[in-house]
Each structure stands twice: as structure tokens, then as C-alpha cells.
Image 1 (cartoon, rainbow, N blue to C red):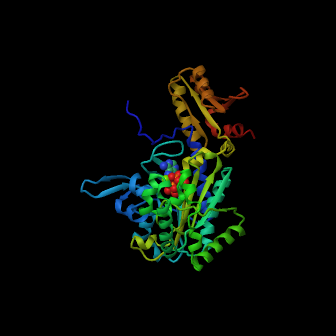
Image 2 (image 1 turned 90 degrees about the vertical axis):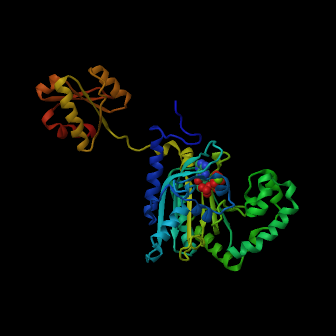
Image 3 (image 1 turned 45 degrees about the vertical axis):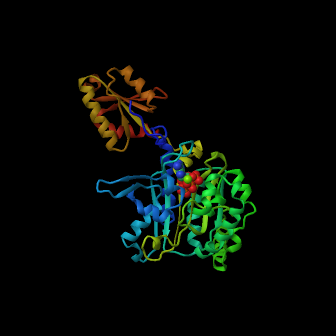
Length: 419
Ligand code: ATP
Ligand code: MG
């Protein structure tokens, strides 16, 4: 037997209704906030990710699915959506469009990580990118959108954590202070963090290992090295969040695992997700477009993991009005043909209709109608066809009605809706 790949999951029909609720809710709110869908490719040239996410990040160093094309070009399955979106923005000269470019996307992402609950090798994200506006209100807008979606889905126990990463110059003046401190305390850090001192020292602050956290508790803080401009910008974001009543908690350790962020960075965590407690994250990335050789374009965005939202989705979010489904119980030579027409006619008039073509007796049909949870069955044998009638059976009350076959659709409508 050939099995699926480790960390790559099937979503069976029992699970897809949750996903539809999540996707429909996200789309509805994205629409209201003026974000438009973009569909970008699943694979890109490797250098796109190496240059945007950063060569010494976990993602690029050890998590990418990279392979050679037939001509030797190195390609990579996308580990996230921002790089591809920005590549498309530059390639299609969207900077020339005189209105803000606000995009959203859905889709699978690929990272070679150790699979566990809430951590997969093929996972799915919903993300948005707001390109063109260097204004704290743009940051508030994307955070508010994310917050509305998660609240509308009924997710509980959420916290918005937020931090100010400052401008590049701010981090450049801070980094040596941090490195000096980390070197002094090197022996108390995990092996990963010892390596990070050279490659990506800010990431040490974000390490989840308790010893590292303790060790960095007294480290110099980025907040103390921030320029006036960075402070002012961030204050604007916080005031905006206050104005729209979105609660947040400041987390000076919050450093994202991607190099392109500056100023505002945020993460939404959920108390009941266990170790993989991040639902989504994002921030401002004002230099990424330029890094990828595009025109200077400020930007802010986020991405959320759909698997993690699905894990948190309360049952109440799934309670939508049950869709009436009519089961067509057709048997006999003439009945079967008339049944096929009835199925098509019902569907064409907007009613969901199904049948199990393996069943040849009324009893077998009705059993399948029950198993499929159909509210009604339409019984149609050779006798009915000869009389020009059809029987509608309410599967719950068991009451039955004779309807004329020639005007079935007119006669059936009021009985299905119960009006
Ligand atoms: P984590 O800290 O959980 O590794 P991350 O910082 O790598 O997350 P991002 O790259 O910011 O995550 O991606 C945003 C969101 O995508 C995460 O908050 C999470 O919900 C989801 N996500 C990331 N990696 C995975 C994965 N391997 N499996 C499932 N969901 C994931
Ligand atoms: Mg990760």
C-alpha cells in the first residue's frame, strides 16, 4: 500500500466543513477591509526565499523543500506567501497603480519540520499584504482584520502580542550590545542559540528553551536602543489599536523568524493550543520590496495557520442552517430513467439531490436515504411512472404525499420548505 508522506495530511469530507467556514469567514472580512485575492505559484526560484526570508533563518537553513529543475535551476516549494506576493508585485509593476495594493491569499505552504500536533510539512495559510502605506493606520488595519476574523470564528483565549523592532539602524546599534551579553552567557544557552549568536542573535530572545529565556531575562533590550522616529511610529500603532478597542500585550522578546520585519511585529497566541501556541503572526516589512530589486515600498501583513484555527474552532461555528437534500429512490426500468431526470431537474432548480445507484429495492433505497441524512425521499417505481405520479416521503415524520410527475418542481417546493 502506498501511503501519504509524513506530516502531509488528507482532509477528509468530515473535516472540510470546518475549513469552509474558516475560508468563507476570512474572505468575507478581507472583502470588507478592501483586500483582494491574489493567487501566486506554489514553487519559485530558491533565491527568492533565501533573499527575502534571510539566509540564516531556520526556514531557509533547514526547512525548505528545494530541488533541481531539469536545467539545473534550483527551485523551492514555497515555505510562506509573502516572498511570492512581493515578487508578483514587482514583476507586474503594481507600484505604478495609484491605489494601495492590498492582497490576500490562501494556500498550502511547505516546511521540513518535525511533524507533531499543529505542525506539519504541508500546512495551509491565509495571509494578507498591504503594500504602499507607511502609516500606523495600515498596521492597525491588518491587525484589526486578523482580530475580527478570529473573533468572528468564535476562537477563545486569544492574545495579541506586539513589539517594536525599530528601523534597521536601530537594530544595527543594538545587535553588538546583545552579542556582547550573549557571549558572556554563552555556556548557559542551548546549542541552537549558541550558533545564533553569530548568525541571528535577535532570535535568541525568542527561544522557547527555559534556560535560554532565563539567561536573556537580563539582556539589554532593543526597546532602549530605539530611535525617536521608531518610538513615535509604534506609539501611533498602539493608539490606533486603543481607538478600535483591540486589546494587546507588549512582548519585548517577540522577534519573528524571518529577517524582513521592521517596526511593528505581532503574533496571536491561543492558550489552548499546547506547545504550538501561535495562531498567526505578522508585521511591517518596509525594505523587502527594495531587497528584491523593486521600488521602495512600505508594507505590512500577516499569515495565519489554518490547521491551528481548525483545531480551535468551536462546534458552534459550524451550526449553519441544514441544507435540505432529497434522496431519489428510483427502481424498475421506467422508474430508474424517470429518477435520473428527477435528479437533474431538482438540481437544476437549486435543490440538492442524491441517489445510490447500487440500490434496486425501495427498502434498500430508504436505508441509504437515512444513512445519508436526507430529509426527504422521492419514491419512483414503474407503477408511479405509469400513473404519472411520484411519492414524496418526509424521512423524519414518515408522512407521504402523492405529487404529479409532470409538475414535480412546482409541487415539491412548498413541501420541502414546510411553508
Ligand atoms: P512557529 O513559531 O509555530 O514555528 P512560525 O513563526 O514559523 O511559527 P510563521 O512563519 O510566522 O510561523 O507562520 C505563521 C503561522 O503559520 C504560524 O503562526 C502557524 O499558525 C502557521 N504555521 C507555521 N508553520 C507551520 C507548520 N509547520 N505547520 C502548521 N502550521 C504552521
Ligand atoms: Mg516555525
